[in-house]
Image (cartoon, rainbow, N blue to C red):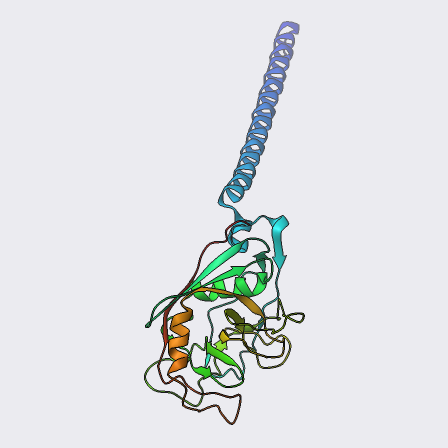
Length: 279
């Protein structure tokens, strides 16, 4: 049998072990709490850092050509169904749907005959300007020919078909475009003539919402119906256009839309759009 003293010693030892276990448990909980708090702090820093990074990189500006969200316009670019697309369609993706609604841009069309420049007002044509900027950045217009010239009734030089390339002309010239369409903007319904000399405007199929990449430069006042987006105003190079017009056309489209292929070929070697200014 154990003595009273032995039982007392055993009880004291057991009490000490319990106290040590409790202290170890509390210390473990403190370490866990500190670890959780530390992880939360790291998470907050990561989230804050992500927000700072997004703000610093200007995510909205990339979409809108250098504008704030408050100045942005929401645009709709309707994709042409992939099934049944003709080979004249050139797919370079869709432009950002959020576009700058203020400021201006300079369009520069470098050609084999000399440069042509135009001023684009973003407030008047935010979606069309956004489309042009996108296409130009993808090299969509590079090394394509202006395929149509009209010298009677109206005076326009039409360009922007990505399939009008190489030597000679094809029956399909004038049928090409991007893989999307957009609605018309800035229609000159209250202007006479609607399309005076010096205007650059967008061609379409005659149906609403059929604007694509083709455009025409007006080199003489033209009494067209006001159904075509006025993109901007020519600021330089009209002499180049008139030089082409003076050489005449081959009458290839005389029985259809009018005019024909320019006898003096003009090729757009590169089209560029400047960053938005004053937005």
